[in-house]
Length: 313
Image: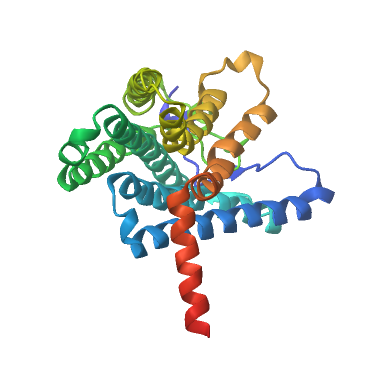
């Protein structure tokens, strides 16, 4: 296609969720509530970990970073979605769309790497308990988090720079509630073969490789648990990993539903629903998973509430 037949777009239109007009108010209240729970719940996790010295361990160090990532990850898409539902203002500037794509990829990849780091922490704690403090030292934990940030930033920047070089013609309608990379590539007039190649390569690095590492870690954990002679030891190990396994199932289940299922077997509406699970619901569930299923977090919350009650008296 020649340059004369191309026109650069200054904005994109986000169609939002496929909701009937009479249901907009109900869904607006629902998603606003989900977003507030996400922010408040994850902030509470960070606060508890900061205030309780018993939670100053590698596992909760990674959890605090995961909670912060979930807050920002949800904030990348949900406020704009709520604005579309409330004001019907569906446009997003070209630069704003690229920025949203960058931060979405950055935080999604960071989530994946942090969950992998948590799986490694549980593997060392259960399979090599005598060497746990040596292997998962503070410097190692900091390097894992910094490495996660560097790789996630590099992947997001790589995708965004390649996206910025593409041309977009008359069609500027995105059938989602956020600027999804795959949807933007479908709108482009340019050759996107290099972008598709990078998606495949970066997907192996940021999604499949961490997922394999998690499977290997929990494979070793499962083998170690089966060698424990007492039922009490098995229950304790399962309780330790239960919350993490829940997050892994939710996170990668959503990814597989959105990006790995054959597109011919799914409609656009089902893809949007899966995207809502991946971008909105999953970040909200972390506070419930870690507070309701973890005795250390519940103990820290009771300690905080008892202090507030004592100070008020």
